[in-house]
Amino acid sequence: MSRTVLADQLMEILLEARVERIYGVVGDSLNPLVDALRRGGRIEWVHVRNEEAGAFAAAAEAQLTGRLAVCAGSCGPGNTHLIQGLYDAHRTGAPVLAIASQIPSVQVGLDFFQETHPERLFVECSHYCELISQVAQMPRVARSAVQHALGGGGVSVLVISGDVLHRPPEIPAGRSDVLIAKATATPPAEQVMALAERLNQASSVTLFCGAGVASARAEVMELAGKLHSPIGHTLRGKEWIQYDNRYDVGMTGLLGYGACYEAMNDADLLVLLGTDFPYQDFLPGARTVQIDRDATRLGRRTPLELAVHGDVAATLRAVLPLVEQKTERSFLDHMLHRHATALEHGVSAYTHDIERHRPIHPEYAARILDEVASDDAVFTVDTGMNNVWAARYITPNGRRRVIGSFRHGSMANALPQAIGAQLAYPGRQVIAMAGDGGLGMLLGELLTISMYQLPVKVIVFNNSALGMVKLEMLVDGLPDYQIDNGDFDYGAIAQAAGIHGIRVEEPTDVRVALGDALTHPGPALVDLATDPNALSIPPHITAAEVKGFALAAGKTVLDGGVGKMIEMARVNLRNIPRPTITA
Ligand SMILES: Cc1ncc(C[n+]2csc(CCOP(=O)(O)OP(=O)(O)O)c2C)c(N)n1
Ligand SMILES: [Mg+2]
Image (cartoon, rainbow, N blue to C red; front, side):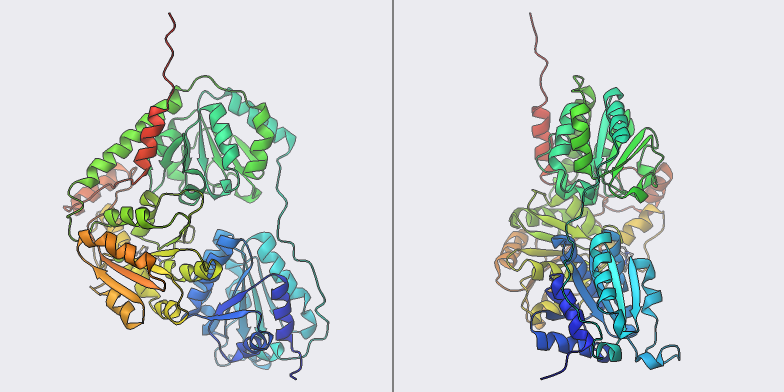
């Protein structure tokens, strides 16, 4: 029987934190850990093709489940590959532990083969980044890493040489409870009072919601009902707040639509709820209140009239009894009208001949994808134009999830995130909305889904271009340059990798191809030959930008449809109470 080594102890601590798998690529310095998994048989090793994908997959798993997820890379290049996914995890607050193995401990500091210093490299994308050079640092340093990732919400990195992993432990691991549920922050009474005062005094209020409203939907709705306030959202807030929302005015920012920008800028008081929305140009810079459970975020995007430190749900529960029911609702009604008008405009701009438009219009394909996807699908969305299509066409319902690299903005996230999502939820439909540039960047991960027969559905919006950059160049008044990705048939590439793959060039074939792929029992890829000129103009670009745009464009530019949102906007208009006429 083999003797117990430090790697076994590390594995015990990961099991204690309910870790089910480690994503990575094996390599000599990691071998003791991989061998411990093999012998233990309780944690699965997921062999990705690039450690970056392993980090993205772990980040997706952690973000979706709230549990600790783990990735690993061998010494030097094996773990430098992790960095992109770790930045993404850290900035999303996803609890991820990265195990970065190190060159032989006696060689550190001698410019040895593959020598890097992960404990320096990963500092910026982690809460905790420590080297285990002494056996007796275990088990406490490993537990501390786990707790930093879970407690702080973000990344921990453990750096450890293979020879150290292979030594016998000096201190027994024992058992320790892993605290997973965190306390909620309730604001001090003065802040609650001050918030109530402002809400009561304001003549009109707009609520702008980020991902921090995830567990506060009922409270936000109740507050909007009392204040008659429009509700706008960020891309990350959308999945939690936009559905069945009588107060919805859409989204602001570069991907914005509807009346959100106006509602935020025209309101007497703007309330930011659980959002760290970074574009200050889209914020009014006037009377603003911010509520956030992370006090360090307060006021960093815009000056605040009032900073409130608390979880959104807890804060609203505390303030709601003090908020008076407003009677005046003309601001809300006006914004609901503006919203519906903006969406109607979008619909008429894009529906014209869309079903025969060749190459396939991406918005048409996104709308069909929304229709055929299941009610609890998990969508992973590549950075690029897919962000626009997902924001406008994927209809949230409280059960679906939509994740992307929405804070770090890295390309190539969708396919590896789908791997993590599918492993975390084997029974759920997982759809990667991929750009052709993004897919090409981590194309090898098709082999991962094929090898594990993960039933991930990859839908490639293949415009043969770095479409988002093409748009940026147009907006900047530059001719597009170096944005050509080349024309490749990813359906055929998928087939060669043993995946159900198809290329679709006719718009009339989109529905059947997507339907077939989604019902296919194994991995599937649909390569949609989409129109590179279907671009969405940000609704609030400056006059100079518009000029540059017009100068460079001379092409078809659509400002985009809005999917099923229009139906809700129309219903919301119909639901505006009519004044009762009394004799
Ligand atoms: C790793 C990385 N490199 C470069 C960029 C800059 N960038 C943002 S979107 C984009 C184009 C994405 O192209 P594609 O995946 O084909 O999607 P499309 O916009 O065409 O739908 C680029 C190059 C980035 N965000 N991340
Ligand atoms: Mg593209």
